[in-house]
Length: 321
Image (cartoon, rainbow, N blue to C red):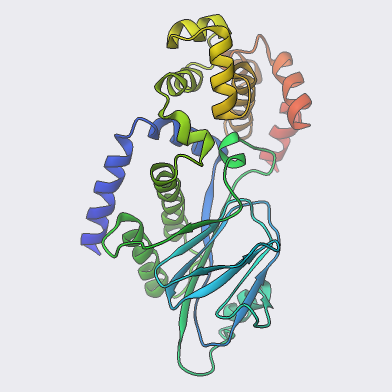
């Protein structure tokens, strides 16, 4: 285990040196992703599991054997051993060793495991599956999430890669603790999510609009300025001056990259940061508002009600409850 932790530490150090990392980290911390494993089981063929639609990302790892995944009527995907299937949008889907198998609801699988009577255990073990999820506050959204496709398939994960080292560490923790409901496993799952996003950014940048095209250093700089200085009175002229673009050019490039205009993104980002600060800190509403570029707490309140349908006062009540 010490070797695995050493390799993971080195991999995370390299990620932190990536110029995209601070931006990605800021987004993930603001959305407050929380990872967990909800199923880890040996299986004997034939077997099949169905999973209802959820509002958060889920993933499945084929620890042993190959299996099939189907999402919303799309052509099914085959995942071989040591591959990972990630569903960023929480779509309804199924997983089975054969597409024609009957699919048992995942709730029944989880309940059976909790009663120490797991399903699909008759006969020799043919498969091992680990399933997890990454939750975040339902009221939040970001172009990062909107840019992801319905299914991501991570193939050919090397035994000595940081991703597989982390998966191995999670599996070891589950085996040692005898269950997957544990803070350590949850935190490791969050790290896995970050590493998968970075891997997808590196390998499939041409189809990952939001972070992939931040290879345009000028747009990356504009995003970084908004994230690090949200209290600044940014205008198109000032942003353009900072990154060397005209008003029309920055609007066009930013729209193509991020999916919204620069000032619209800035205002959306300010409201996300305000949501986090209001719900998870004790700072006064006025202080939060000023720190994010709003003229007052009342201005912030109107903006949050308009976009999120919730006032700062209501968020504070949710925190207390």
